Image (cartoon, rainbow, N blue to C red; front, side, top):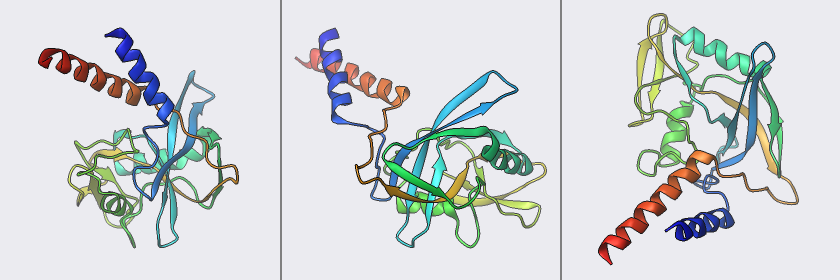
Length: 212
C-alpha cells in the first residue's frame, strides 16, 4: 500500500503541475508574497493570468479576503500594492499597467466573465484553489450604497448594502503578460492540491482491494 502511494505521488509530480492551465485562457504564472514589516507574518499566493480574446489581460490573486464591508475590502485591495512583494513569475514577463483592486462590475462584470468563459461551476474552479462559494464577493462598483456582488456558486450577481453588508474580497490587476523565449517554468503543485490527489489515490487503492 505504501509503495503504491509513493509511486503514484512520484508519477503525479513527474507529470507536471496539476494547477496550471484550466482552459486556453487561464494559467498560473507564479506567486506573490504578502508581508507586513510590523507583523511577523508572511504568506505566498498564486498569480493567475487571464488572457481574453478582446485583448484585456488580467492577473488574479488566488486568495479570498475574509468577509468585510465594501469599504474595508476596497482598502484591502488597494493596500496590496504596499504589502504584496516578491513577485516570482519564472518563465513570464509581467508589465503591470494598473493597481490591485476589486473586480469591476461596469462596463464589464469581470467575475461574471471569468465564470462563464471558463465553465466555472460545471468544470470546478481550477486553477483557482481559494475561491469561496458560500457567499458573495464585492465588485468595485462605486455608485449607490447598494453595491453589486457576485456569487461563484451559480454565477449570479446581486446587490448588498455596502455600509452594513458583508462579503468576501478578491483582487485583480491589469497587466501585459508574455512568455519568455525559454518558455514558462512549471509552477509547483500547492501542497493542499497534492494531498487531495494523494487522498484520491488512497481511496482508489482501497476500492480495488475490496473488489479484488
